Each structure stands twice: as C-alpha cells, then as structure tokens.
Image 1 (cartoon, rainbow, N blue to C red):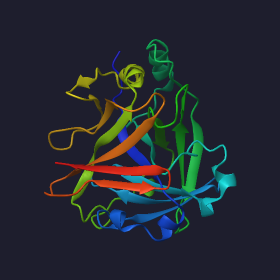
Image 2 (image 1 turned 120 degrees about the vertical axis):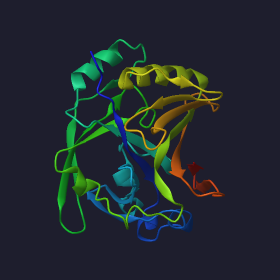
Image 3 (image 1 turned 120 degrees about the horizontal axis):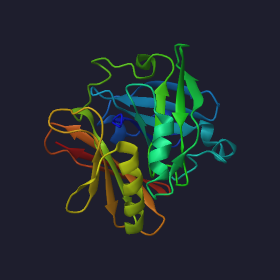
Image 4 (image 1 turned 90 degrees about the horizontal axis):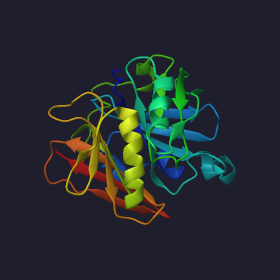
Length: 262
C-alpha cells in the first residue's frame, strides 16, 4: 500500500514576547516578517516568515511572557526552535500512520487530531486540525497541521511577503541534533512516518519530504553529538546568495541557530 508523502509545513521559533513587537536585527536583517495573530487559547501570539515554496517560519511567544500561560504548555521550553510540522496534500491517513508506528519499535505514537485556530489582525478567523506526538519530547518528531479553512488564509503568500534580504526561497530542512541512541529511535519513527529509508551521509541521517524545489526536497536531518536526552533544532534555509553568515544567537538559556544553504 502506498504511503501519502508528507510535506514540511512550518517550523516554530519561540522568542520573548517583546521580540514580536520589535524583532531583533538578526531576524529583520535576513527575513521579511508578516502579521500573525493570537491563538484561540489566548496563551500565545505569532508573526510569520513566509517562503515562496509554501513553507513558513512561525515566530511565536507567550503573551507578556506570562509564566502561567507557559505552565503546562507543550512549548514550555528554552527559547529557540522548539518544533516543526508536517502536512499532507490530501486527507490525513491517521489510522494508517498509527499502524506503521506501532510496528516500528520506536515507541512513538500520535494522539487523535484536535481543532486549533487563531484570528488574524484583520479579523479573519482560521481553523486547522493538529495532531501531536506521544511517547516523545515535542520537537523530536513532527506534529501535523491540516487546514480546515482555506490554507491561503493561514499562509498568505505574495511577492512582497516572500522576498527576503537573505534571498531565501524556502526551507532546506530541519536539523535535529541529539544523542546517538536518539538518532536510532527517531530514525525508526521517521521511517514509519514518511515511508522512506533515511539517506545516510557522513555525519547525518536525512529524510526528504514533500515536493522538490529545484534539485532537492526539504529534509529532516538527524545528527548525533549531544548529551543523552538533549535536543537542539536548527532551521536550514535555502538561498542563492553567497557569503551569508549563519545565525547563532544566545537568548537567555536557549539558542537560535539558522543555517544558510545553496
């Protein structure tokens, strides 16, 4: 039975609340930020970095950095990249996904989809279904986001919003650094999720997903090298510009890492 190929939908970057109103220069020097809005639960707000390939970066913050809004939230984590989402072009084959994961030996599963949403500053309400992983820390494997309202409301692409100072055309992928035993476990889960064998490179295991852009697809890249139980996510951005400096910013107890790749 064929497996519907997932696509990389978006990556989540958690920043302090003040950075939504006044974004840091390491962000604005490289990217054009578009309006976002408040999520339906009232705990978080966001702004977006939209890419011409249809993916986007969600820059999110807890409202007023209120610790009561953070408590118990799945993104109550240090600042930096905290999660990433897959989607599918057609109806979500949830039951088939769960069956594949059950036989993977990874210990990863997914809870039932549930409704989420937010309201844009212009008053337009958007709704989607999100499906969160279980048995693993958030950000280790993707969650899923499927639009209920038209996708263009959530991802309003146009030339102005997708033109960036760094020349980014889209996401080359997500880099997930973890302990060696984590790479093995997450690799098994991603094989079940994508239906693909990981491509083993010199120092990473790569799972390509979605529609090719040029000669390559976005990918999830698993790299071993940090302590047991630790996870560090980086965003890899595709650009044709030469000589760009990768972003590496320390924010309190977290780190933001953006890598530029041709």
